[in-house]
Length: 225
Length: 230
Image (cartoon, rainbow over all chains, first blue to last red; front, side, top):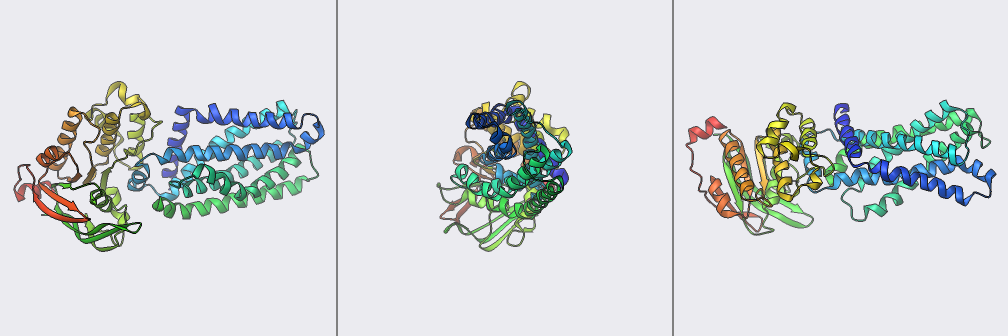
């Protein structure tokens, strides 16, 4: 299963490396969203500072939708679903591979977004360890849920509009948890470090739940494609 | 002689439409069987059923001794399907695609270059993204993937489509060579002159059933030859 996951992830990252879609489109998109937020709240610097954790994670969620759409568009080419089923690859491995590919792209985007926030919003990051743990746990959950819903909508007409409609409400707990944890890390809210780590626990539980759901559900989803 | 494909009164329903409505067909190892018939007759459905990609509604269906009514997945690794869609990643090069499918099917990576060369895409074309290739070149790339699978059964749906004369000759050569090596081939084609010359037998599909069975123009080999090949 893990070997199959690596085969799929390596392929997805190779596709990204060759097409540069994340680099050329997703990264500028994330930065443009940050800039627009800065324009909208420019006159209220205090509000901008306090809203920064939420703005960061909303930006990541919007980028996630595009990233998942992009990842599953490549699987929608004629004949690919059949060949995947004929290959004998473990469906759970395919799911984990897709998740790993999205995770790597998300982490790269997050680094860029956080750096962008530091420059545009003059954000000062306090607890780097908390931030890294939050970002990793949240990204695993986002990548797993995104991959599950991306597969669910593979072959469905109008999936481009359906994906955000279905996925964004599902990942709302990640937005809440990651924002709260980041408030503690950035010192912008009244969330204590102790509470922040409990939010990280919730993010981890979300990630594990979606990883397990994907491992068990991906096979039937692939069969229905 | 080894029976590779056994269909008896096989029914396959797509949505509410019975795409196969009681097809009966037996194919032995090393045989090349042409499936001919009008559009919508059920040729592609029959091929996909044999690949274990469609559920059998009723009747009997066995491929390589795998019962498709109970476990259609068991046969998948052992067959190769060349369908209407080439099944390639457009952003990857030909070499990347063949390497990926070789890794996915756990076959010998050492054969990648040889397979690409056999379909005439060696050199610069091997390193061109599939999205930039012509329809015929994509078909050749899909054939390279098919070659690396070492499948026991080839299921070819319009393999000549989009190919120039040289490409069609290549398909015929690959199919004949594979059959000589014991591979069983079911080929659906509208290019009847060419495909009939290639086939041992011709099955006419109409209305989801095998309406007629006849001989192809390929010189029939003795049963001993077929047995040793299989």
